[in-house]
Structures are given as C-alpha cells and as structure tokens.
Image (cartoon, rainbow, N blue to C red; front, top):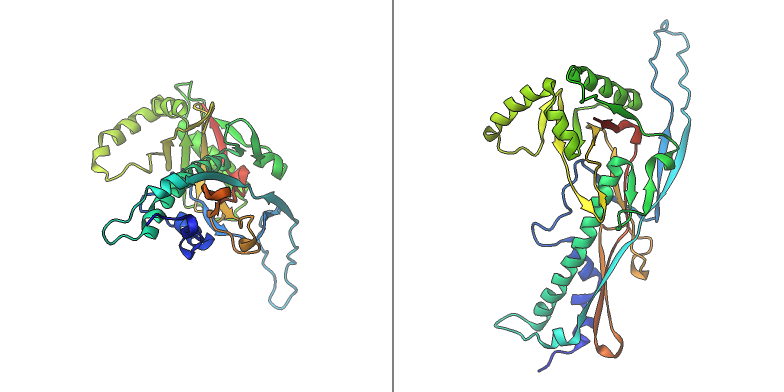
Length: 333
C-alpha cells in the first residue's frame, strides 16, 4: 500500500517530537568546540538584561565594639539590554522521497520516514551549530559577525560603552622579559575584575602567527622545546602549551573571508569567573512556544500545497556574549 502524507499529521511528526529529535541528536553530534566555556540557559523572553556594577569592592575598617559600623553604600548599577538573534533554516522532504520508502522487516513506515526526516534535521542542525560556534568565538573577540563574516551583528564594546584593552608582548625583541609581560597583563585583568571573582587559571587563545612568534621567542623557546619533547607522555594536549602559568593554544577557523581570529593576535582569558561567557536561548516564534522556556533548537513541519511534500524548519534564538569584555585582554606581537 503506498504511503501517504497523512502520516505527517500524526504525533510522530509533531513540533514536540521534532524539537526533541533535533535537541537530542545521535552521539557525537555536538556544537564544535569553543576555546572557552559557556554557561547555557533558556529564557522566556526575546532579550536579555545584563546587570553592570561599576564600583569596586572596598575593605571594612575596624571599629570599637558597640559603635556604629561603617556604612555600605549601594553601588551604581545599570541594565544593559541585548536582543536575542534569530537563526532559521528550511529544507524539504518531497513526496517522491516518501513514496520511495517501503517498510522492511519489523520496521514500520513511520519509523523509516522518521529516519529520513531526522537525517534532514541533523543537516539543518549542523548549520546552526557551525553558526553558534562562530558567534561564540565572536563573544571572545568582542565582535559577533553574520554568516557572511562581514555584517557586524553585535559589538560588545560599543554596546557596553567601553573600549577594548590591548597589550603588546613585544615578541620581536629578543630581550623582552616575557614572564614579566605576562604578569603585567594578568594584573590588568585582575584590576578589571576589581577583586569580584576568584581566578583559578589562565588561558590564551592564539592566532597561528602569534603562537609561532610566541613559542619561537628566545625566552620561551627552551620551555616550549622541553614541553614538546615530553608531549607524548600526555594523554591529551587539549589544554595547550603551559608557560607563565598560562595555557597557550593556537586556534583557527574561517567563515567566508573572515577568520575566527586574527593570526597575529591572542586573547588572554581568566578561568573560573562565573557567568563570564553565557549562552541564552529564547523560545521559537511559534504559537505553541510563546512565553515558554527557550530551548537551543526547534523544529517544525508543514505539508506543502497539493501534498507535494513537507517543508521542515529548524531554528535557534541564541545570544552568546562575554559579560565582562574588559577582562579579556587582546595581545599583539
């Protein structure tokens, strides 16, 4: 008996089922790795407010017992709004593809068609995942670009009304004290955080040219060679080369003519700061999902005119940002 498109009107292809499928892909289908960790949550709104407090912490002076204590004055806080982005892609499953599916053995028609639809959903999710990875790298550098790598979607420094902090390591001079340079740039970060967080480590995300210049500097080369000779003793080198209590690792990626990272720069990132990098996901623009807690992905289908097939839609409504951009220092050669 030929398969009809009526099968798509059943629960097996509802928005709940398709959304669950695209959010729980087969093992190994994940967002490409990011050089920093993001805190992920869903939200019910189409924008996110980031609270900013400009005052630094101050110590409490000693007083006599029984006397009035020092007054703690409320800090100046303001709320910085960020609109979530809308990523949407569509694909078709034509009637001819469905009519060509026949049940085999104990597999039902619904199961076999579900496999066809899920394969199409995975391709759609892969495109969204690549976009999320690109946006997350933009959160690190401070500028998030559109898919063409040219249209600027969000400039974090402009949005917060601040300037990016930059420091040169003077790698072109053989006599540069690199260890001292690293200590200096760490102190810039510590001052930016004003003692509001406990830094547990340091990570430097490097462009290829910067990394090559760094590891070949006379003050660094010997340490790098010692590390490189013993690299086979390690089970994994994912954390990169350690120098000056900082993990240095080269990264590369490209969208269109835009590189993920300028080859000649690096970004020093403090590790262990709660909420430094966040991902927030809002609800889809469907009647069924309005005012619900957002999920990373949504999927929905609709039968085409004259039953010629179904149209699949997948979407994500993300915001990937750094909440303290001045704590990320741009390093130059």
